[in-house]
Image (cartoon, rainbow, N blue to C red; front, side, top):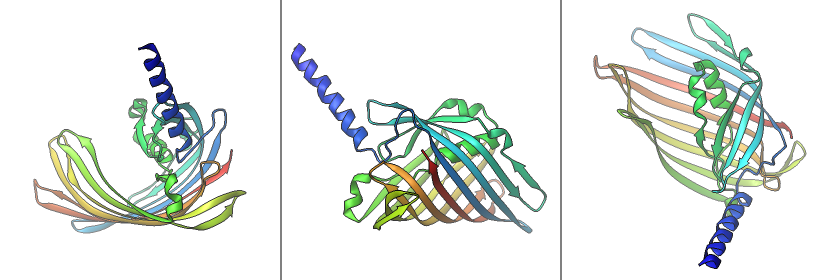
Length: 270
């Protein structure tokens, strides 16, 4: 019995090690990975009687570090904001924030594909502006199965449900990856991978006594450069266009929303 138990531990240890080796992103303990994140966005809301345009622009520098390689092959990482500047402009005012984000950090867990699967609950205690900066910084990695790079092209379908209680949103997505070839980027030998995604969303949000029904579509396309040798995202450019409708059943009011977002991510050094 003892020998069987020892053998089982060996198999578990080998499985965890293999999962870590096959992970899309393979960070090293003791290293810091510095990223520059630049985003621009335009949102147009057709509220009754007027059109509201909201422009946003952000420049964020972050430092990512590995905290722990977990037994299931996941990684616990920490992203710390080095500097941040966010500008939001609407017809009434222009807001600038992000200066107090420097030095703040968020701890989270990613799986073997780089998908964010858990975030430290302490982020809930932060104000909305700081929380949005940190969550945006934690969500920059494109999630994909790096072992499929030799397939040259593959498609992934996914259904995701978020929310709790009466507030739930279901998102159905289809993402296609195409390996265009190899390219040297910032000193790294990278796979050049295009990405195209289509997402349909449907659900309900409840805020106190107010109920909102949401439905919409998003289409995204872009290119990212991935170092398979190092297990690192080196550079990415992505554009996402969306159409969404928010309906308030209480008064049958509808608010159509269109949006355009462009994001650029670049590894500055390790």
